[in-house]
Amino acid sequence: MRQPEPEPQSFDRVLSSMCTEPHPDARAAAERFLATNPGDPATYDAVAELEARAVEGLAALAAHPTPADAAGYVTSGGTEANVQAVRSARNRHGGSDGSRGGSGGARSERDVNVVAPASAHFSFTKAAALLDVELRTVPLDDDYRADAEAVAAAVDDATALVVGVAGSTEYGRVDPISELAAIAEEAGARFHVDAAWGGFVLPFTDRDWSFADAPVDTLTIDPHKFGQAPVPAGGLLAREDAALDALAVETPYLESRSQATLTGTRSGAGVAGAVAAMDALWPDGYREAAERAADNAEWLAGELAARGYDVVEPELPLVAADVPESEFQALRDAGWKVSRTGSGELRVVCMPHVTRAALRAFLDDLDGIRR
Image (tube, rainbow, N blue to C red; front, side, top):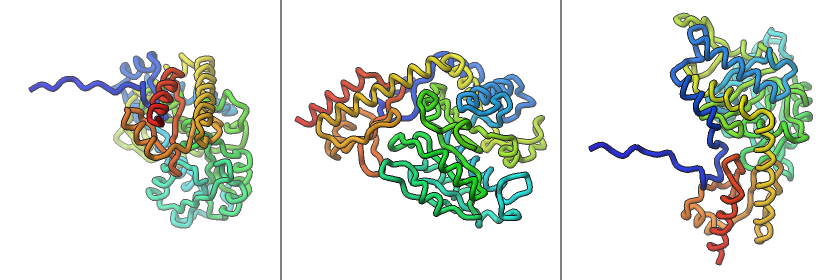
């Protein structure tokens, strides 16, 4: 018997996801390029040209000094980009490619470490396991940012990469990027910024996070999050070609004779969708979305505080509040898609699809639960 066609769930009650509804232009572009493979750019030259546009657009957004010459590619998401940043730094550490590594020669992978704050995305744990490098996780300060002194104490001459987070997934915090970059440079390490979620919001703030703010080597920025591109569409950017050259492998049976990506075959949908979204929204559409999200986060934080909850003051449009487990579970039972931080707080991400009306309805349900 033929089953009814499944329908994707509505975003109306999705309050914890860092993905959102794609822009209509991005959706249409993704469908047009669905079957193309940017993993073989010599064969699929049309989507390869689009990917070059995507990288240039992302690089301009992240204030790369020469966006038209920026290295990078459209990844499956932030996890792939972060894994590749670790892999590139590992491969370059102590090498002879003009890198900063000062150890005088290539090390075995087991001797290499990566220093990251406790707020770093779990993709770095995956990267360390996959690449057989040591992950040194350092504590945060009292405001949930990387403790620069702890980072400085953790690095040594085997440190290949220092990681800073620009928009942490639990509290929306931005690490002291310039300080961390200076620590990395002093240690002879590369410096990576994970701006997977924050990258499309931070250009409209006064916070340091980009290539223009510090000597950033690689940067993760995901169009399929606040960029309103379809999933999957992440982004890895590099200051110089050598970062991607360190990832390249020979591909003898393809028209393209080498490849620096991790997944190989990729759908052109993410590439085309990312370009279409940026064409439609950069910069004014993104600025309006970022400002609206910030207003919603401030409003929600104030409403929760007025009800007596302990609230973490939002820095980017993400709200964390200490809501009792019974109330949290009742909200889930009422259909609200909410999550918790590692410490157990309710976590709400004010993405472009999250409206003030939805937040009012959420609070109405919370008030009903509290009665």
